[in-house]
Length: 366
Image (cartoon, rainbow, N blue to C red):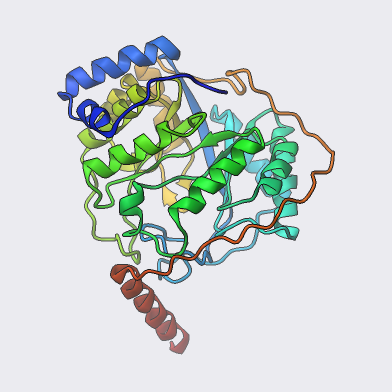
């Protein structure tokens, strides 16, 4: 998993980001071809196995219970439902199933035991399995590894400096601690962020700097474009220009040459021509399926038409050589972690939480 690479400075990453666009894409494409098959793109499918009811106040998220977005607090998906979703994903060429739960952090309870069974079930279908369940300790990470998990996703979202403008219910350090726990379990790390939340270019590059300084660096870095959802504090933010997404993909590719750059949320707003430039610049993965957790995603058949037009091929599962095994041995319980609650006030988040509360009261009286 380990990768030896250049030690970047913020100034160097900013210089890469501001390279004239066509030259930047050419440089990124050159790096991409040195480390990856440029015709292969991994198709992943993201399934929300536990939707809604999250206690966090992430300003972009429709699953935060405090906002009023039309996303309800739903029960866990059954094993049969997840198996069916995985088989449907395989039918459209997906080699990885990512399962998300709207939790602040993993708890050692029956719901987590159920997730362990879901991981084993999907791994038994010869698919790579990824989970994004919030913060977790080393013991929980090892349980997931023993169940056959391939990767764990926990995004940094943005720079440490801008993070406090987006979220007040958990800290940046807690995110980094979770990534450290994932590494201790010898799991593949998937961590990236969201652009288009009002952050500066410097914030984007600072996030890439932080990711590049992890040891080892993440095997996967998702580049998400904000999907502005009605009822969240970011509902009125305009979609980010396609050029910014291409720049971010290309810069990520150059800064982390061996990492898989994942073109993730926001593709419904992207033209196929824009996505083609992202693939040229080093994007090596997309999510296929009608939804990314709760937000819309392009139709799978549209993606297949795009693949055919561009001569792209779906990547096989475990093509990178790492094949996790399901192990039954017990793992000693790790010391409990007390996750922080920074508690600073984000005016927009507080405003929308109050609006959500009032809307729910109104609905109850109707």
